Image 1 (spheres, rainbow, N blue to C red):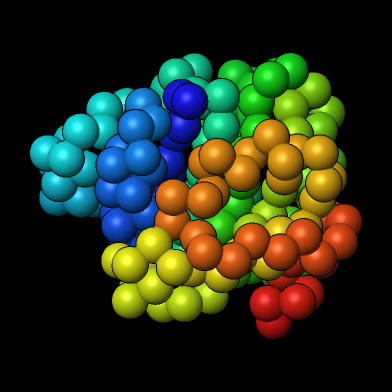
Image 2 (image 1 turned 135 degrees about the vertical axis):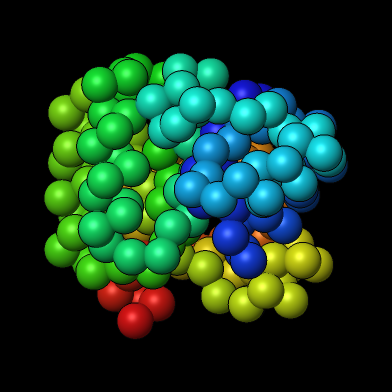
Amino acid sequence: MDIGFIGLGAMGLPMTRHLVEAGHTVTVASRSRAPIERAVGFGATEASGPAAVADASEIVILCVPNSPEVDEVVGSMVDRLGDGHIVIDCSTIDPDVERAQHERVAATGARYLEAPLSGGTAGAEKGTLTLMVGGDPGALDAARPALEPFASVIVHVGGPGMGQVVKL
């Protein structure tokens, strides 16, 4: 599966490693150079930014620090999304911002899930994170192969915004 990953911080970098180890083709972007180099070192491919990640991927996973960054990243790739894409946000952000992203992505024909995570950096390193997923259950079924390499518990908790509500 062609997977994109945006946000190679303390959580995102080990999550990306698990995806590569599971045999997925992973294209990455991040603000910091060092984690990109580490990801390329274990088999990921660097993209020039979020739009290029979307171009190279069926599924794009975000793991960024806050609501404005999720909004910015989705905005920078929304023109490249369409039928067949699934965007999954693993950040912990405001539920209303997340609902807006669901609508924004759905308007392109793509699907969107929020999947805030629990388990900390130790869980990310071990691949044992827990995901609380909000969004369409059919999109989650299609996205499971992109989540299972780094999550041992994946729970669908309801519609748009509900993953964030449950996490908070």
